[in-house]
Each structure stands twice: as structure tokens, then as C-alpha cells.
Length: 405
Image (cartoon, rainbow, N blue to C red; front, top):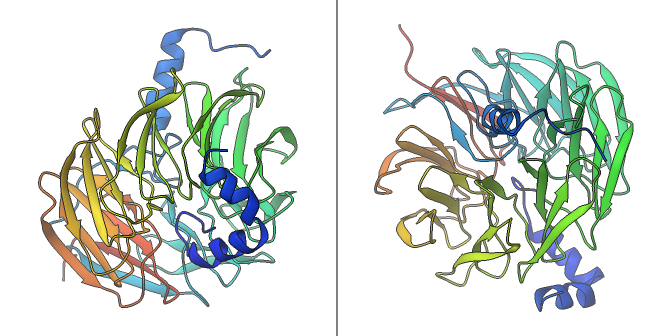
């Protein structure tokens, strides 16, 4: 299977060849110190769920993976700079401290200057990097197809530590404070079927949760829980304190993308052409959106009343958050595996037709587009009106308002 930002099809063929029996069954249905108060939990969730102004330090902007950026986008962005790597860029950028951190299939993690695109450093792993980086406390964390989770110094790319899993890591890492508040933990899923929780300072394991098939996307974090889907066709709800299962919900098909969590509901699409909303308290599906016979690999963006996600039907979909009723669709000329980002009244998303699109949140009308040329499966990162995105041509592109002459 693919990473959220990568090519799923080759991996799916491998899944079919190696685990046909298991996937067939799956498709048919197969004590820590608490926070001091409920207010503390609520406030922490609010601070970490969405991206704040000047920050996009991880995939989808924040731990709840909501895909919502602060500020607003220019009406007519222009290309500010581009940077060429040695292979396709399916990783999505993290933007922090005036830098762009992004992986490439050439096995390098790059740090670029956000203002100019100048390379600050690059560090090589032993495998392609489709995983999207996480920037936290002076380190950048990223997974590699070599099966390792790496921690590098953001200033110079020096290796701080690496943690070995049993197989490749394609999804983005996430993070949470430990239950006692004294340390930070990093979470990442692996094709070894396991969700790994490690200490951000040392890389030592805190706990491991084992599922029954590949974990392809990123785990979402909110309200003391982490939620992820996998190739076992289940949505797993796990206690962050100890890695124990709280619930599992049958989705009906393999889950390629990452869920988003808002108000005790998880939103995600799956391979059998449906997009679901799951009530995490009840452990049951609240609603299902199924319009055409195409899979959903894109991860959703969640606003106060809408859910926006891409589909392999070559369209961007917008539905009502409360019941999944369709609001509008926007047609591109290629599959939309890129995960949309909402910024103010605009949405930005890439397509396999080689274009980056900006559409109206209100009605789905196209406001602007830019033809890069090759498929854009990477997801946008947005900070201060700037958009950074990777492309299968090996390029990293930054768009924003036209500067002064």
C-alpha cells in the first residue's frame, strides 16, 4: 500500500500477491498519572489539534490531522522558488523556524530555507522517504522505507538517534506529551503491522501495539487517544497512556490514508469506495458517504461544519460534517491522492493531472491553478500565505503572494 502522499498501486499489488487470503477476509469484515483537570485536557487538545499562525510542523498541521491552516491565501499565488531533488517527492513538507523539511525518493531528508528555497542541509537514509517529517523541540523526525524512524538535529541534520521497526515506514510520525507531562513521545506506524511509541529524546520504546496487517498512514492524536486505520480494514482506537486497545471498528475495507479526529469522531476514506465518520465513544459508524466506485486515499480536512477529501474518481469532495450529505464536488483531470488543506475561505490540493488547485470552500469553484506537469501526490503545507508542495518530477515548489520588484 502507499503512503498518504505516495503511489499506492504498486504496494497494493504486493499486498494482493503476498496476503490475498488475509485481505480477502479483511475486506469481508475481518496506570499513568492523568492531566490535572478536564480543562487542562481540553486546552491541550485545542493547542495541538490545528496549525497556528506561522507553523506547519507536521503532516496535516497538527496531531489531530485536521488539515486546517491559519491566515489566508493570496488570490493569485505565484511561484516563488523551486528546488530539485534526485527523485520523486511524495513526502509532504513540514515548515518550522523559517525552514522547509521534506523527504524524497532519493533517500534524502532536505532542509531548505523557506524564504528562498536554498538548501541548508541534506541527510541520507538507506531507503526512500515518503514519510512526512515532524518538527519538534529542535529535532526533525521522519520514517524511511529502510524500516527506521530517524531523529535529526534541525540546525545541521546531525543524527540524534534512530529506532528500528520490522519493516518500512511510509506514514508520518505524530507526537503527544507523556501522561505525567515530563517527556514527549513520538508515534509511528510500520509495515511490520505495529504502531510504535518511542521517547522523543532517546528513541527508546515506550510501548508497541500490534495490529494484523500493514499500517500505512499516520495515527491521529486527540483527547488521550490515538486512532489509525490499516490494511486489516479496522479503525484502531488506542490509549496513549499504555498502548492498550480501547476499541476497534470494522471499516469494511483497507484504510490507506490517515484519519482526522474532531469532537470524538474520526473521519477517513477506504479502498472500497466509501468515506466514513466513526463515533469514537460508541465505537460505531455514524455515517457513510459513497457516491461512485472509486477508492479514497486522500486524508480529509475538517472545518467546523464540513469535511473535504480527494478521491480516485478525479474529484475533490465536500460533505456536511454532521451527516455526510454532499455539498459540492470539484473535478480535476487526474486522481486526487493529495490531501487538501483549508486556509480561510480557500482550499489547496494537488492532483495526478500535474496541477495544484485552489478552490472556494463555499462552493467548490476553481479560483486558481498552476500546471507543474507531473503528478502531485504530496499534500500542501501552508504557512503565512505560502504553499509548499512536492511533485513526482522531483521538485519542491513554493507559491505565495507576488513580492515587491
